[in-house]
Length: 246
Image 1: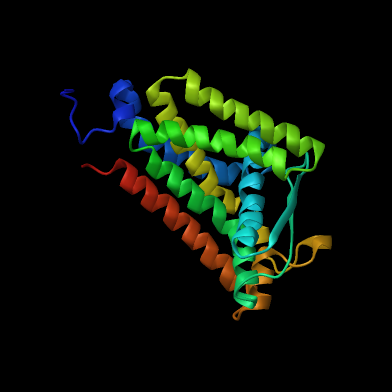
Image 2: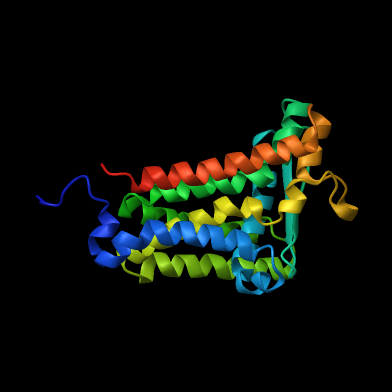
């Protein structure tokens, strides 16, 4: 029988002391730096892989919510400039509410998934499993839904890279990696703050906030602000739970 303390996060047992002390601080710093860098031109180059991952989280949120509500997730396109679009068809359960949920699933899907990844990091077993599942999900989605050549290659490579982390790195690296990816997913809502608080989205028509406002009540900026606050809340609470003392 192991004499390992039950209240210690198993992936942290192999972490150097400085990683144990600085993990939370670095994750918060990474979240803030990511939000800032996404707002400046050079940041787009530095964070390019995470921009593609953020787009995948966002568009998969739309498509999977449509699928859950009885629609059909037709295809997903991701382009070299970091933009993307998910196509779905068919009638949705709940009518106007269902259409509003599909609109909200884009901005809110990533922070919900990100919070889940951060919470999974509390134990090595769940952290390791989450890395595997995320890598497999990226590859499977590329095979089933992604229909742009760039998106197929980029999402497939991201999936393989994450699987490499799951199988080829020490436990503490896997734990920190799943937390970092979770943070990136949470803050991806702020990737385009102007889009979140915009009613329209260029030639594509309404923004996600505009679609929600069209289907429900209250203005688009209210829904944009609500999703921004909810995303930040999920990030803070998931990190608090992951690092709180047992």
